[in-house]
Length: 82
Image 1 (cartoon, rainbow, N blue to C red):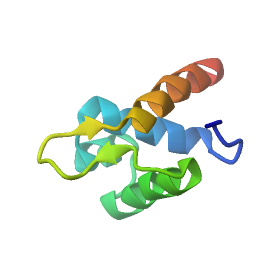
Image 2: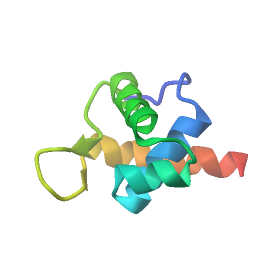
Image 3: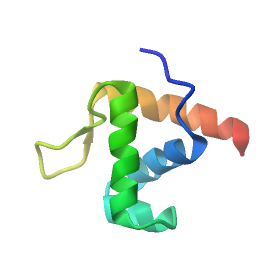
Image 4: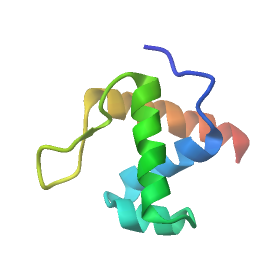
């Protein structure tokens, strides 16, 4: 897979926040947006990446292999803009 250039830095920051908090509500609060639009951003990322980023079948927060790859690339990309 290749990271799409359509991914916005804000969207990547949202995904990084989600991975850090392991909680949609807390991550949305960090990004200063409400939870429903935050969830839509994560869904959009999954559509653009053409796969699930988070395993939603368990009660715990688990990144899929695609999610782990995106997290690594997102961190590297965002670092350039900090």
